Amino acid sequence: MAKEKYIGAIDQGTTGTRFMIFDHDSNIFGSYYKEHEQIFPKPGWVEHDPQEIWRNTEYVMRKALQSVKLSIMDLKAIGITNQRETTVVWDKNSGIPIFNAIVWQCTRTNEICESVKKDGFEEEIKARTGLLTATYFSGPKIKWLLDNKSDSHSKAANGQLLFGNIDTWIIWNLTGGTKGGVHVTDCTNASRTMLMNLKTLDWDDDLLEILKVPRSMLPEIRPSSDANIYGYVKCTSGDGPPVSGDLGDQQAALFGQTCFETGNAKNTYGTGNFLLMNTGKNIVKSESGLLTTVGYGVGKDITYALEGSVAISGAAVQWLRDQLNFFSTAKESEELASSVQNNGGVYFVPAFVGLFSPHWDITARGTIVGLTRGSDRAHITRAVLESIAFQSLDVFKAMEVDSKVNLSSLRVDGGASKNNLLMQFQADILGIECVRPKIKETTALGAAYAAGLAVDFWHDFEELRKKWIVDRVFNPNMVDEERTKLVHFWNKAVTKAKAWIEPC
Image (cartoon, rainbow, N blue to C red; front, side, top):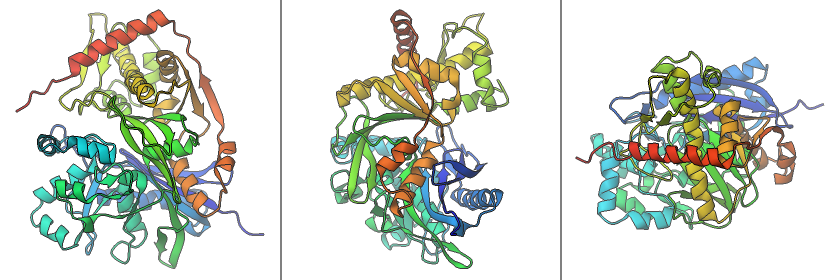
């Protein structure tokens, strides 16, 4: 009898890397996680060490397999999901990055973005990519790296340098690196660069010219689930399992939540918050500060999505833990916040790197308002948790306007979705049910699904739907009057946070 096979998923996130092993019933068979260093060289600048990320990826894969007594050859395929927009440029001959990875949260490219806007390209970029001209995306980060590292422009023009979001960096190393590594990305990650045309699903020469990015640097764009696999894991004994799935983390969560129908929506609570709605084959343009993006691509079939991106959510809880020492573990935040009946009039706007959707104010900064002599750690902690839900409310309202769909249910996942207090408040403030699945690590599950579909480990969407199991449904129980009051003061707090940094 043949030995059972499994699917592996590399989940490379903003704070760390996880390798998960799934069986055919979508159960987690094995898992291992390791954090990496967060580098803050200047206010608003955020970096990661790409080589540390690759070392950690190798480490967690090895440890996860060892923990369940498997070898890499027991994997039918491997999928990748990654922190999107985080930008790496490296020398293809040495395999060494020319600089640290510039993280999606980093604001150093603000001058580049403002220059692009001043030159009148903003509307054209939005029309072609579905994105706003913002520091969030990879394209301006590539330009900054080429402009600030000597000889980089000439090396890039000569084909010596390669660009990738973290998915591309990992796949290149996983499939051999300097010894034949495959230089690819998928359509979801490519759609986050400000360089890919949403209609053609190819790099747009006019956009490349605006940001002075040579096409030779860019990876081949492939489907998220690709039966024509990207490549094979290079092992000491030869070829390992195929790498056949790749999705940016938020699209992976959409896929892992089996949001395969138009109008399905999910919200992921991680370092930031990301609410995505499946818009089917339609490219829905936003007039409300949202992004139009690729949801996923399975073979030649492309599904689009609307997205609202919140820069800081779970990271604010980490800030309470690490910078203010309010508690020793993020899990304790729920207990502390639950020790008071309400926020005591305290509101917190976590605009540490500005505000993303739907406000898009890079000059906003973190703000605490409503403090009184009676305010304590519990009120502030509760305000921080509530800010996560309030930011999602802002995105939710914009999404209903753009999509012309009144959402009645929201699927939730990610680390902070384990916080029952937060999930109940989210349902209350939205006024709809929030549904939490049994498997909360849906980003990794989505990458596994994409890889597994490509190699026929799972056959179709219907089989995947049957494996999606509900853990808990949070139903709203807040009266309209209370909701209206809370939202009023939240909006007032946001106005205090905006335009804090004055232009030079």
